[in-house]
Amino acid sequence: MVSATDGFVLETARLRLRTFGPDDADDLFEILGDPETMQYYPAPYGREGTLRWIEDNMRRYELDGFGLWAMELKEKGRFVGDCGPAVREVDGQREVEIGWHVNRALWNRGLATEAAAASRDHCFSALGLERVISLIRPENLPSRRVAQKIGMIIEREVDWHGYRHFVYAAWRPTG
Image (cartoon, rainbow, N blue to C red):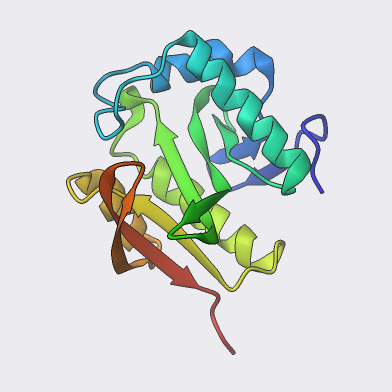
C-alpha cells in the first residue's frame, strides 16, 4: 500500500506522478476551478472542493493503495495536473477508473495521454488488474481522444451521477 507520505513517483519521458499533499491545493484549484477545464462536470470546484479532492485521494492511498496523483513536468517540477487510478462504483460494480486533468495552458501537448498510458500500465503491472475504465461524457471529445490513444474502447453507456457517460475500457495484454 502507498501512503500519502511515501510520495510515490511514477515517471514517464516528461512527467512525474506523485502523491498529493495539502500544499498542492492552489495549483490544483487553478485546474479544478477553471470553468473551461471543468465544463463536463456539474460545476467548477471551489477552494473547499479542491481541498476535499486532495483529501479524498490521500484517503484512497491508504484504503486502496492508489488514487489520482499530482502530475509534474520532470524538467521544471511544475505542477500541471492530475492523473491516475481511482475506485468508482459503476452499475453496482467496483471499477478502477483512470482519470486525468491538465492545466488548460498545456492542452494539446500529449501530457494527458502520456500520464494516462503510464497509469494504465501501472494498473496492469504493479496493481495486477485485468481491466481499467474511464468514465467520459459523450460530448467530451478531448478526453475521448485520450482514451482512444491509450487503447481504450467504448464498452457501454451508463448513467453515472446523473449524466450519460461512455465507459471506455482497456484490458491487460495477454501473452
